[in-house]
Image (cartoon, rainbow, N blue to C red; front, side, top):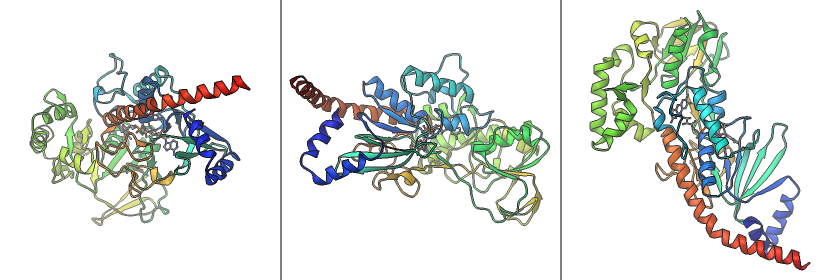
Length: 431
Ligand SMILES: Cc1cc2nc3c(=O)[nH]c(=O)nc-3n(C[C@H](O)[C@H](O)[C@H](O)COP(=O)(O)OP(=O)(O)OC[C@H]3O[C@@H](n4cnc5c(N)ncnc54)[C@H](O)[C@@H]3O)c2cc1C
């Protein structure tokens, strides 16, 4: 209604506007009264729920055929939340009390499904947003989506919430000789379990949480994994001093400076895990929390991989120089045979590929330019949720702020909406 009011007002005076509206009417066009949310992952769902609670309706567009597609379609079977559940719950609804501290991926997906049901969120599935642009003449965002059969829809909305995630596209590095290698090369987003790699020599590239956990999974299925470690990495025990390392860090940070907490974490890690450099895992110069704050690089929370590295079940290798038919040559000159390569090389944002906006989002990495906690709001009703490099905790903060901000505007404009509705009704009864 609000949208109609503005459109009607402008239409009477502006020839460019009239031309644009004529162009719009030639394809399927949907006017969204409230915010349009792109992405039905945890961030999109959390924002829709917070808005709903404030009485603001929204429309959610999702490119895949389900909610939380990253978790449902692109993660391995043994995955559990890396952080304790109290740091991963979405606003307004906690996890069931009988869930373990680290819920399984199936439990997490079940929780998200109940969440969507509770707040009556019904995303429009199989709609990939291919373009979104602010139309200064209209004063609205024009968002184009493409369906699975190529059908196009244009949405016109006052508020646009970007919830497409930090992990929208897999990062697949170039490697010399890639075309020559005869075995399977796949990204972790396509890895389900070590079952199909039994007895095989598998090279896992990347030593973040996923790479480390995939190696452990391969060991459990009697595959023979090796791990490429190109960079320095902080490996911390998942629990220390009887508490989760993450929870303990958050608690200590309330009283102590970050460098002091980092020192403490490193001393306890050294006592519990030993000197990780001895096994090929050199630590960065900066402490784990300071590094996370400055670069977003997450420390690895060990779930047992380090023991397999120490025992020699997982071999640590340097960077790859080139791939050969059945082997990999490393930068130290050694060559080893492998049957498969798994790329735990991470993900990237896809925002620059579809959002035609230069101020809020960096074209380079697809993240908001303003650092946390100020990256959630842009100009002209544009918002970002879930780009804080702080996981689901960051998502909850963003979702609450966005809903509060839009609610203010929505309530203010509700007065105009009511006046407009009244005038339409009066006109209708008079004619
Ligand atoms: C293996 C793994 C484990 C993790 N474990 C934890 C953890 O324990 N705790 C934690 O806090 N965080 C964890 N994370 C981080 C996790 O990604 C986020 O916390 C969470 O999934 C982010 O939710 P999101 O909605 O922002 O993004 P996503 O979950 O990626 O959802 C984005 C949605 O947008 C959709 N989309 C993308 N582009 C378009 C488009 N153009 N048009 C329409 N739809 C689109 C996608 O299909 C997707 O469904 C983990 C990540 C990974 C990969």
